[in-house]
Image 1 (cartoon, helix red, strand yellow):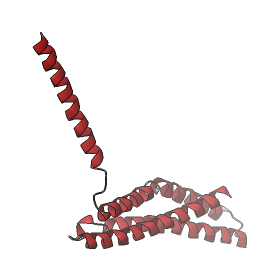
Image 2: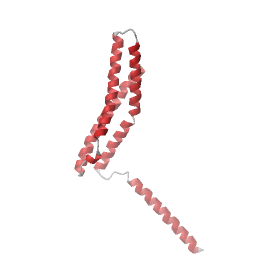
Image 3: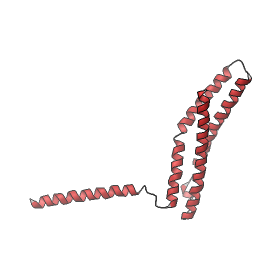
Length: 152
């Protein structure tokens, strides 16, 4: 009877230890191992933040197109209507350019081209981080302008 209890305790302890090590190992896989890994993670965070706003970009493009159509439908073609039309055109173009810039960045981004050495990878990811940050700014700026216009 003692043997069964000791054997059961051993199996229980061995099973818990194995599970604990496995979980610890999984948590360590998210920890960057080098500067290039950290930069890659920053680039991907920028990408994810920008992509999260794609639905918003599309919503505001649709909204501004509807506003533009409403202004076009007004029979009185005054200078004010023309000015509003130009402002909407400009904002719509900014939204479209921001979306295109993100798509172009994604098409050009290829971690396999980062290089073999740590220095090459650091240079590549620094450049990509700069590019994706610029695209994020473009997205944020175009959305801010579109939000402001949609309130008017």
